[in-house]
Image (cartoon, rainbow, N blue to C red; front, side):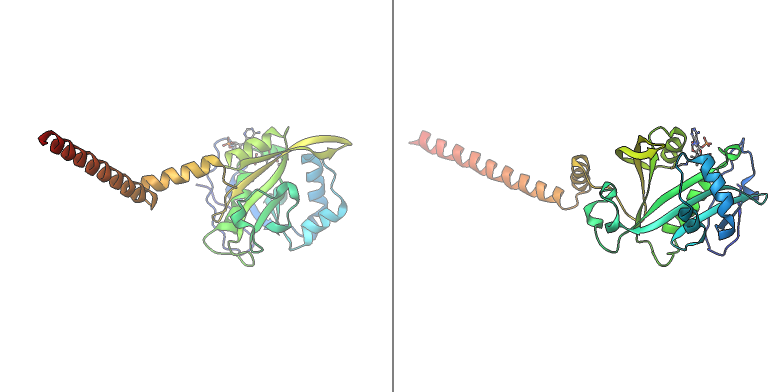
Length: 261
Ligand SMILES: CC(C)(COP(=O)(O)OP(=O)(O)OC[C@H]1O[C@@H](n2cnc3c(N)ncnc32)[C@H](O)[C@@H]1OP(=O)(O)O)[C@@H](O)C(=O)NCCC(=O)NCCS
C-alpha cells in the first residue's frame, strides 16, 4: 500500500493502491495547494493538456483565489498533476446543469462541486496520480470530518468533457461518475463547435432525479421489505378473501334451504 505526503494539515486520509507499472511511486508524490508562483508552470501544463485557451485571469484566479480547491501533485519539485474545483450553490448553476440533482435538493443550502480542470503530465499517466487527486477532493467534500464552510452540503461533483476525450471518459467512468447529459455544440474550439458530456458523481446522499424505473424499484423494494405497502396489500387481500368466502357459504345455505322446500 502506498502513501503520499501532504504539505498542509488538512487532516485528509486517502488510501491508494499503487499500480504495478507506475512511472512514479505515489509515496514520493507530494500534494499542496496552488500558489501564485505556480502560474507559469500551470499555464504551460494546461496548454499541453487542453485544447481550450484560458484567459490570464483564469490562471490568476485558480492559483490565488480561495474560491477554488486547486490541488497540485508534485514529484521531484515539478507539478505532475492538478485538480481544480469550485464549490457553487446548486440554484446558481447554468440551465444546462440544473437537473443533475433530484428536485428534493433544490434549496439554497445545497451546494455542488464543479471540476474545472484535472490533468496529469503525459509521462506520469496511468500511475494513479489523477485517482489520488480526485480522492482527496471527494474526501474533502464527503469524508467523515465535515469541512467548513460546506459541511457535507455538497451533493454532487460534476464536470463537462469533450465527447472525443476517451481517456478522460474512461477515467471518470472507472471512478463511477455517471453520464448525465449530452451537450451538443457545448464547446467552441478554434472556431469550431464540439459536443460535450456532463458526468456526475453523487456524494453526501445526493442523487439524480428519479425516473419511472426508480419509482417502480422503490415501490417494489418497499413491498418486499413490508414497509407499509406490503401489510396494507395483505390486509386488503385477507378482507377480500373473507368476504368472498362468506358470500359463497351463505349462497350454499340458501340453496340448501330452497332444496328443503
Ligand atoms: C484523464 C487523466 C487525468 C487520467 O489521469 P491518470 O493519472 O492517467 O489516471 P489514473 O492513473 O488515476 O487512472 C485511473 C484509471 O482510469 C482509467 N484510465 C485512465 N486513463 C485511461 C486511458 N487512457 N485509457 C483507458 N483507461 C484509462 C483506468 O481504468 C485507470 O486505472 P488502471 O491504470 O489501473 O487501468 C489523464 O489522462 C489526462 O491528464 N488527460 C488529459 C487532460 C484531460 O483530458 N483531463 C480531463 C478533462 S475533463
